[in-house]
Image (cartoon, rainbow, N blue to C red; front, side, top):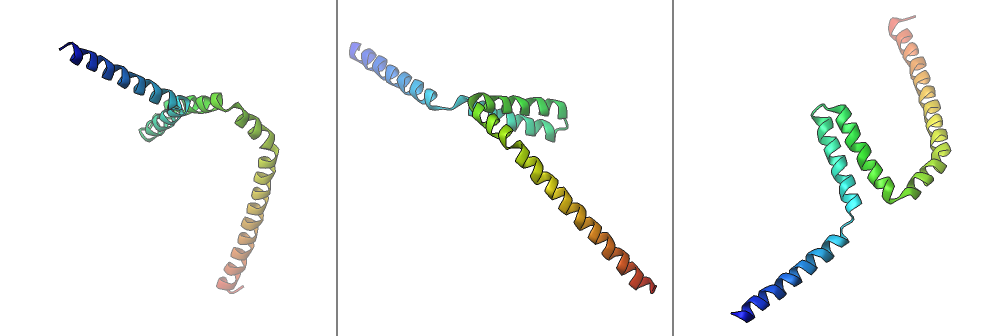
Length: 113
């Protein structure tokens, strides 16, 4: 009976060590961030926009806490993103203007002017 108790204790200690080692391998900040983003999505779907924004912000903060260099890289890249956005808007504006001109021409042809 004593050897069964000893074997049980040994098995329990092995299981405990395995659990501890597997828990230390899990990137908890990523798990927290993913959970926050998922919660934010659910809250947004249910119509709770402020709570969704708060949950998503918490997820973003968790990611940023793990990788602060991402913020630095994004900040350094910001002027390039702004320029690309401005270029896109200029092209979109030109496209809409050309579309408007074509619409006027089509209306004149249809109206017989």
